[in-house]
Length: 173
Image 1 (spheres, one colour):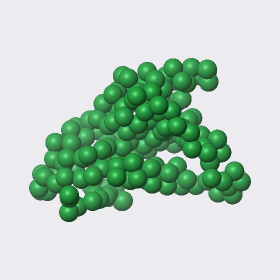
Image 2: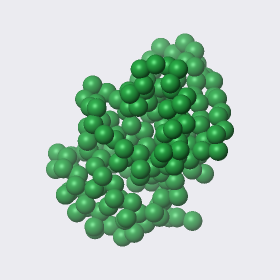
Image 3: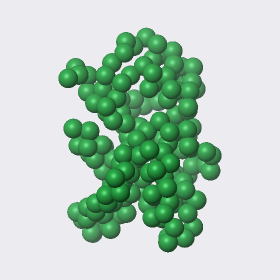
Image 4: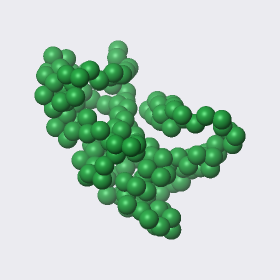
């Protein structure tokens, strides 16, 4: 059992923008702690670097770790495979997954999903699909579908973030 359940960074002050140095220095002051899960969101700004991830994983122990890599207006086509190698549970919106994997044809998505799971040793890959619900792909090739709870949403802002948080915490129990 752990005494600490959640580590969160909700605002990124300007001095932390260069995470490699500032984040590493901050981590060096914290003793080694075990956590149930690590929830990481990268909005494509490059704040989560390979160097900071290595330090984070060396400093703390996580039973499960989750990544939600979101595509927004500042998203670039840079290589994110260093992130994929550090996590074993992923949650993507279908269009974000297609952009990350450079999928132009919908017929290729299932093949790319299975390739992603085997290449990066993924335990869980969740693809959310709006009003079509979400799909959980497990490394044992099990696929589970969860229908959307609301087909007439008036405002979808934050729906993916909420789904990510709730799924990750419940899955880590």
